[in-house]
Amino acid sequence: MTAAIIDGKAFAAKVRAQVAAHVAKLTADSGIVPGLAVVLVGEDPASQVYVRSKGKQTVEAGMASFEHKLPAETPEVELLALVRRLNADPAVHGILVQLPLPAHINADLVINAIDPAKDVDGFHISNVGLLGTGQKAMVPCTPLGCLMLLRDRLGKLAGLDAVVIGRSNIVGKPMAQLLLADSCTVTIAHSRTRDLPGLCRRADIVIAAVGRPEMVTGDWIKPGATVIDVGINRIERDGKEKLVGDVDFASAVQVAGAITPVPGGVGPMTIACLLANTLTACCRANGLPEPAGLTA
Ligand code: GUN
Image 1 (cartoon, rainbow, N blue to C red):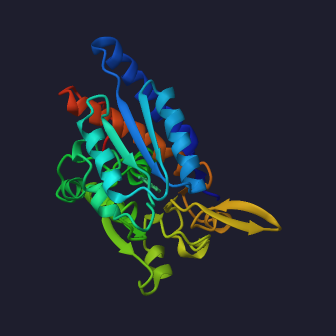
Image 2 (image 1 turned 45 degrees about the horizontal axis):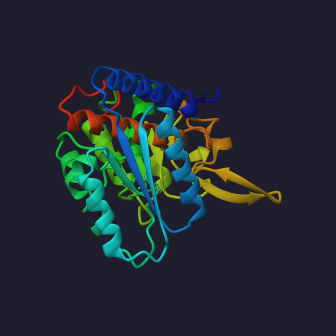
């Protein structure tokens, strides 16, 4: 039997609709318009596409979008000054500085200059600490999207064995914290892990976030397991450019119980969760109840 395909595109559309409905009511009741500021430094083509998409979807959800595009050679002090201005701007409820930043800028310094209450990426050390200690935090968007898909598919996750492949601050580590908070038994695997295939074969949930095209093959998957593929890799096959994940979909789909495709799986969930986080930040800033089902 082949796996159920987890339709992240459709799920993300539902999340965006929920956010838009909540924003419409918030604005009608109180006149408040949630605002998201996105800062892009430089001309990285992939980042430009993401930022455009974020701006478009923010406006479609009824929120205000503030885009700040700075040249690649912008000095670090100037970027920090912009972050401080956005921190102080009452129309801005969420701030996202697109990564990667140019090499001459210390990304940690910039991220930690963002007001934690406006840190819709959940990358500020305060939010990392809050998440790790089970307190109310802003949660990184991609892992939050994965969690929503898993809960939708599996219901309660308590007691399940989960393997997270990848230990990045953006996905791997926060993903592990979220699964732990949902009472999974969590293993974080990485490039130095011994017998990664054997480890994955024992897992009920496999999250692949390593950035290696089609590394996880069907023979690594326990029959019936749920496979979440965070990878977005551009490869060339048969002379054509193709987007593939970190999972070899063709073999994994034969074994898994459910699997996310690439594209159309986790990808669309990231921006949907960014919108959800912006709304959550806006509600918290105004002492209003948070939207149900859109936070961890
Ligand atoms: N670059 C790639 N993914 C992300 C993300 O989730 N947030 C930010 N700020 N930059 C990114």
